[in-house]
Length: 165
Image 1 (cartoon, rainbow, N blue to C red):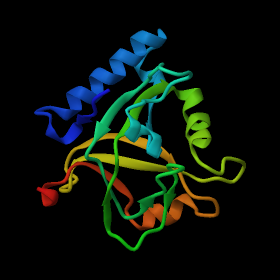
Image 2 (spheres, helix red, strand yellow):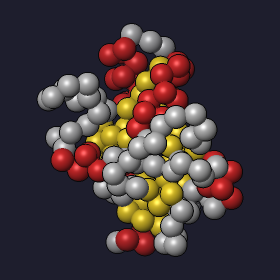
Image 3 (cartoon, rainbow, N blue to C red):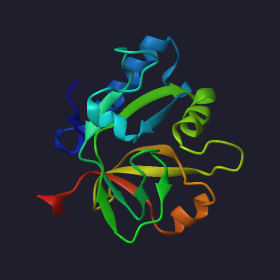
Image 4 (cartoon, rainbow, N blue to C red):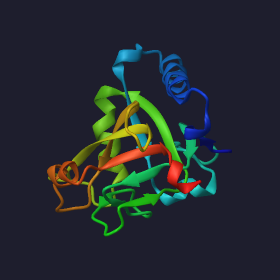
């Protein structure tokens, strides 16, 4: 499976919308009932999107995402504090799931799921100007860290890193 460089599309918002429409049709639900889930786990680098069994894939691999204001543990996909202002992530799987399943799936993605694990709402911007927001995704925080801490640090995902060119 090949990863899409989201920031390289002429209309990345169109790709995000198309992935949402595809998932709504596949699941037989209304668009407004779906929430985005982004899986940052290192296993994605092996070309396997989210799935339920061997060879079964769900989601769309996206590459080139930059995480600002924090870091991500490549083994668990959990957000953690970092001295680096920004870091480039490996391929991640973008999927859309029914609202009721969204938070449960995000908690299951974390390496230390359980009560008290914070879920951080992270905006996904087109570029580092942060003028265009493509989506907002929930990501698990490392155990013991509050979502407020990431809000204060301005945690965000950027699809196109002009500074990296």
